[in-house]
Amino acid sequence: MMVKFDEAEARLFHKKFVCKRCKSVIKAPNMLVIQGKVKCRKCNSKALRTVRKK
Figure (cartoon, rainbow, N blue to C red):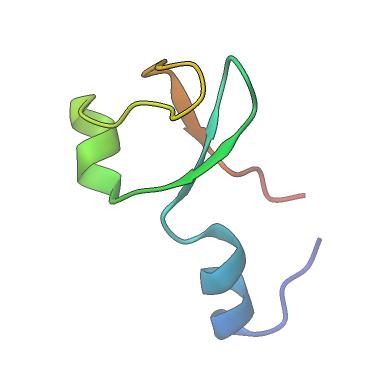
């Protein structure tokens, strides 16, 4: 997926993470995710990844 505008890319990918266990989307600051302080709301997992750009 080619994003044509910087605003669109920020809206789709900025500060969004996906739980590796239940695939729910979570908006959180990058540093808190790296430090492991953010958990998934559904399954309480700390295994998060960024949204994939196709």
